[in-house]
Structures are given as C-alpha cells and as structure tokens.
Image 1: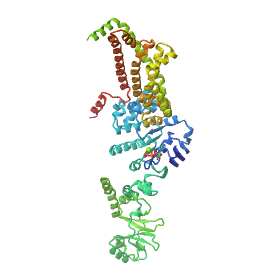
Image 2 (image 1 turned 45 degrees about the horizontal axis):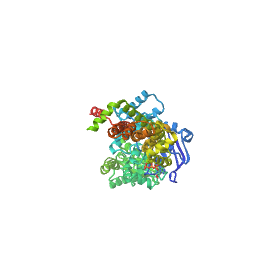
Image 3 (image 1 turned 60 degrees about the vertical axis):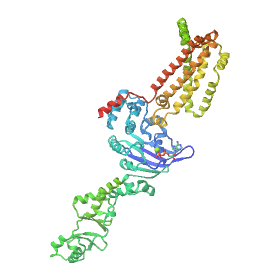
Image 4 (image 1 turned 90 degrees about the horizontal axis):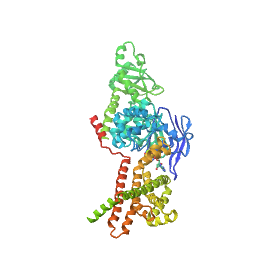
Length: 379
Length: 228
Ligand SMILES: Nc1ncnc2c1ncn2[C@@H]1O[C@H](COP(=O)(O)OP(=O)(O)OP(=O)(O)O)[C@@H](O)[C@H]1O
Ligand SMILES: [Mg+2]
C-alpha cells in the first residue's frame, strides 16, 4: 500500500539524508525503521506525509503518487506521532485527542465520544479528558500522543520513536498494549525506533538503515538468523544473537556429527559387538554412499537373531528423520512430543549427516530457559 | 497635611471636571493602543514568518520609540493640526514597538515540535496560526499591550499642550498658578493610579490567557482519590 521508489532527500546545504531508498509496505504490516542517530529515519518518515518533500524518486500510497494529492488532505488521512510527543499545552486531553476530527468537521458530541472510547483503549479513565497535558505523567502523555494518531481511524500510521522518553517498565507495558491495539485495529504502521528490542518485539519486518540507505530489510527472525553484514550484527548486539540461537539454529548446528553406523551387509553379531563397544542400544544402517537405510536396535536383534544373520534382513526402514536445514525451534517440540530417543539428520539426498539425541535437546532447552534468564539478570 | 486637604478640596469642587478628564485621558490611551494592536499584531506575525524582515521592522519601531514625546507631538501637530487625533496618533506610534516585539517573540517562541505536530495532523497554515501559534503566544502579546498601555497613559499627559485635554490639563493648570502644587498633584495622582490599575488588570488578563492553565488542583486530586 505504501511504496518508496528510488527516493532520495538532499537537504539545503547538500546533506544527503536519504539515498536511493526502495521499499514496499503491504497493508496491515508493522514496519520498524531502525538505525543509529542521524541515519535518516525521521526524514524517511516525514516524506510519507510530505512534511519533507523528496528530492528525487516517488512515494505512492495505494498506487497514487503523494505529490499529486493535496498535502493537507493527505496528512489528515495519515496518523502521525511525532518524536517529541507534541501535545498542545493549551488544549485539554479531549481536545488534543480529537483535534483531527475537529479539522475534519466531525460534530462535537461525536468527538467527545471518540476521545472517551480511545482513552479506554489504554486503560485511562474519562476523568483525564478535561485535564491539560502538563497534568499528566510522561507515560500518560505518550499514550495520548499515540491515541491522537488513532483518532480519525486512519489506515496508515507513522510513529517516530513514540516510546522514546519512557522508563523501561512503562515502555514495555506500552509496547504490549500497542501491539495488541495494532492487531485489533489492523493498521499499517511505520514505526521508527533505535531500540532493537522494541523492533524485534513489534515488527513484522525491520528496516535497518545506515547513512540514509537500507542495509537490510527482513523479518526479525531472518535478521537474527542472517545478519546482512557486520554492521547489522553489531547493531543487533552479541547478546541478542546468543539469546536468539536456540530458536534460530538449524538442526545441523546442534546435531552430533558422527553417529554410530553399520552397513547392511554386516552380520548381527558384528552389530551387537559395535553396540557394546559404543554403549548404545541402536545403530543407524547406511549403504556405501552413506544413504540412510533404516535402523536396528538391540530388541529387534534379540527377537530375530535365530532367523536372520545379516543386518539388512532385520533393518527397520520406517524412521523419522529431519533435514539438516530445518530450524531447531520447529523440531524440538516434535521430537519431544513423539517421545523419540533420537532422530537421524539427513541432507537433501537422504545421506546421513548426524544425529540429534534427547540429551542434546536438553542442552538447548536449558540454554533457552536459564541462559536467557542469566543474561537478563546481568543486563 | 495641608496639601492633602487642598487636594481633597480641589476634588470636591471639581469632581465632574476631573472625572471627564480622567475618562478622556483613558480613552486617548486606549485608542492609541487599540489602533496600534490592529496594526502591530499582524506585523509581528508577519515578521515572525519572514525572519529577515524582523531586524528592519524592529529597528524602525525602536527609532520611533526614541523620539522625545514633545518633539513628536510638535512634528505631528505641523501635519495633523491641533486636537485629540494627533495625540492618539502619537500614542499609536509609541505603542507599536512593544506590541510588535512581543508578538514577534511570542510567535517565534512557540515550540517547533507543536507547529510540526499541527501541520502533520493536517492543519492549514491559517489553522496552525489560529489554533496553535496565537493561543500559545497570547500571554506574551498581552504583556506587550500592557507595556504599551502603561507607556501611553504616561505620554498622554502632554496631550494638553496641543489642546487634547486629559489629566495633563489639570497638571498644566497647576503649573500656571502660584502655589499650584495641590492642583499638580490632583492631576498627577489619578494618572499614576490609572497606570497602576491598567498594569494590574492587564497583568491579570495576561496570566489568565497563559496557555498553561493553573487550576486549584481539585480535579487531579479527585482522580487520585478515586484511583486510590
Ligand atoms: N532540516 C534539515 N536541514 C539539514 N539537514 C538536516 C535537516 N534535518 C535533518 N538533517 C540531517 O539529515 C540527517 C538525517 O536526519 P534524521 O532526522 O532523519 O535522523 P534520524 O535517523 O531521525 O535521527 P534520530 O535517531 O536522532 O532521530 C542528519 O544527519 C541530520 O543532521
Ligand atoms: Mg529522528
């Protein structure tokens, strides 16, 4: 619904704040723009409602070039939360919240009702309607700033560090509240922040900017898993990458690479010898090409040793395997639920490359519970 | 003691006359400030928009301010003749500077974030002026009017020299008779009183128009009580 097409902004004096920006945002998407101070986040945002006009390129909303629409009408159709909150000190909270409605000539009683309704969204009582902004706490003011952008029920909302000036606790609860709100109201949101945790928590996609250019634009998972370059890695921070590991690792990264195997042409007694030697109760059966044939365990050997003598005659071919590329997160639960002791890991040609045992899962679960906790305690 | 009783005696004998001059004096000052406000507030807004002009306009108003009142009256009299209009016009000129300066300062001092906020919400330029800038600058503009009014009440006393009347008339009479001190005071005291009252009333207005409303704290307390 929102599209940047080779957009650049050069300020008077030659400062190139945004350089050749291309970005497409779908309806209902929550986009976080993040980057170090001065990288052009606010500039990018302000170009959307024409507070700043692009030097080159075009921005379109629902296919219509914004330069072709009237700026005043355009702005009334886009909610905007400015970086400095910007509540009007001479207006009551009610007047502040419903200002856009007033500009749109909505009658007084409807405006009042709307302000009341919005206030309840953030768990504030109607008593606040008649107060002035300076009578509210910083956190309450930021909430009102956000509500003001929601008042006219605009489908697109721009937010410039709306939770910037808050202490971590208030910030956290507002983020929660807001994410809930966004899901409920199905808005398209462009959200500027320079707090990575905030972006990871809220965004459907994160746009990482540096020096006026997009360095990477991806889902939070993808960014954690495949940071585009060192800058992104550094920006995300080592802590978060470590924390994120349990969720984003592939099976290949956590498997034990040398499972005990046997080929089908060996005898059962050789198999038993091997098990005893390695103190395991089952063996993976492969052929010369290392392609997985199945599995034998001590029980099967015990039952069938009278009738058969070769491994290939007793092999259990039905085995649950995982591809080495699958995410641990997607596998862990499955493995635990099915009650398997181990799962062989194969590559795309069904060659055996490793094994995941319940023991290695324990490590991961431990890390994700206690590891993270320890980190937060330190941080 | 004797002076006071003489003043009182003067008032008892000339009550109607003093009242008429008092009223006349006030009207001249008020009209001067009113007309100045009509011109100076828009000018102040204008130079706040086009900042480059501000130095020029304010310097000009400054120059007007430095002309001695008698000289100004004399020159204006040559052009406009004797009478009240000339006095009102000179008062108008003296009021320009404080009003322009305060309007300019008031508007320039409105937080940039608020202007942007208004603009971003889709206000037209006029709406930004009317709904944001003027209300927020109002108390500073009022302070300018207050200064102007106090200045003009003082200056209006010399209006009597070109036959405009006012409390200066009484003072002038006092200077023309021997032992006129009580009469001079009978004119000077109401002038001073008028200036003080104007100052207090305008000060009160100024505070009431201040964008940050101070209230008795009852509402907030109510909420706190209900929340508890
Ligand atoms: N009006 C302006 N005139 C000239 N240069 C500007 C102007 N506004 C911003 N810049 C410059 O453009 C660059 C990008 O500014 P912008 O405000 O977009 O940064 P930002 O990413 O929002 O930073 P922050 O996180 O500090 O808010 C900065 O280097 C800034 O100095
Ligand atoms: Mg910014």
